[in-house]
Length: 73
Image (cartoon, rainbow, N blue to C red; front, side):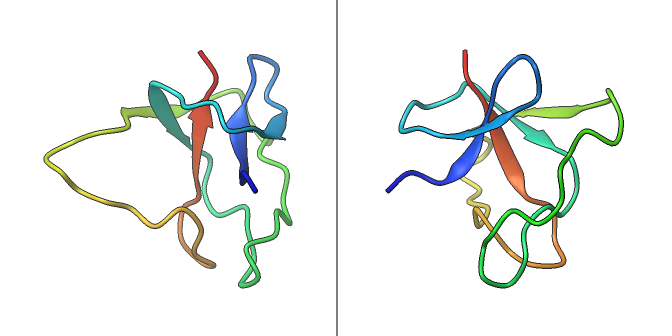
C-alpha cells in the first residue's frame, strides 16, 4: 500500500505509487505510528531537494524528524 507522501501542485497529500523527481521538506508531519497528524500548509515556502544524492538513504517517516514528501511530476 503506498504511503501518503506525494504532494500535488496545490499542496494536497496523496497515497499513490507514482515516483517523484524531487523531495520536499515541510518539517515533521507524522506521529510515531507514521500517520499524518499535521497539515503542511503553514507557509508557501518549500525546501526542495533531489531524491538521490551520494547514495544516501533517508527513512520515509520518523516522528520528531522531518518527513520527506515527494512531488508528482
